[in-house]
Length: 296
Image (cartoon, rainbow, N blue to C red; front, side):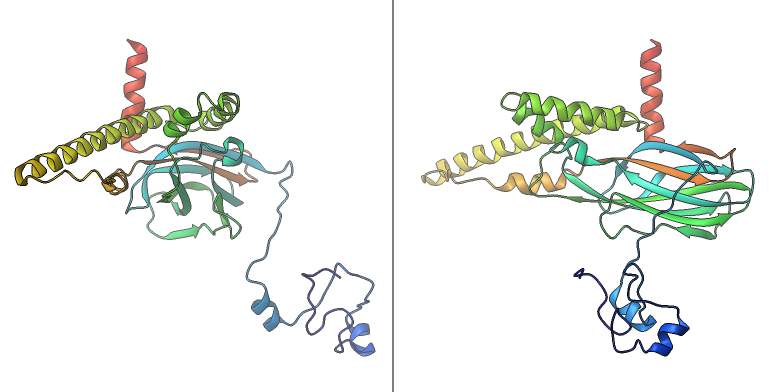
């Protein structure tokens, strides 16, 4: 017997199954794929219900990927998505991160949580909000029946910085010689996965620059602290303390630098479904700079 099988009241072969009830409910013990359970027991035992939706040829999919900067204390995003329906339809919307299993080791310093809200364009009232995936945080989704019109998907992305993790730049530097082949394989998958996200190259370049500047600030600060110890020791005739300087870890926590590639997929039975990525003002600026540089 399956360890996860319901064994309480109305389970297979339980005493509640009298001949009368079996006849009324057309139930037989031979059907192991079907079981009965009282509602109060159901809501007590099962916190989540998984459902698989099959999208056949009647459905249209529109999707877009974009890169966002995630602030430490503010999960609201200037970036958003718009989609347009030309007929009434059931809509399924799913917001996802990239699947980091394909480039293990290059996940970076941060782990992200996603959420979104759907509004009719120009209207203040919330229509639908995403629901989390209890297994993991890679994607969240919602579904709702919508009338023809334009809709805005507003994003919330929060980040947690992991103490034990290393930045992508640090991982590359540490493994470029000793594990070069494996690093190259992971790097190719990393580049392929992120290439589809609008603005990834621009924000990753900005992120790498900030990482370099942060390392240089920490190096200079450490050097200044060491010089100050020597100076203080000389002044009072004592020997400078050469113990470990752990201030680095405190400084690193101040260097918040999180970016995330996210994608929205919208499924609808409207064959003319349209979706548009609305990048943040900062990403627009970086994209315009890149375009201008390419023109020169």
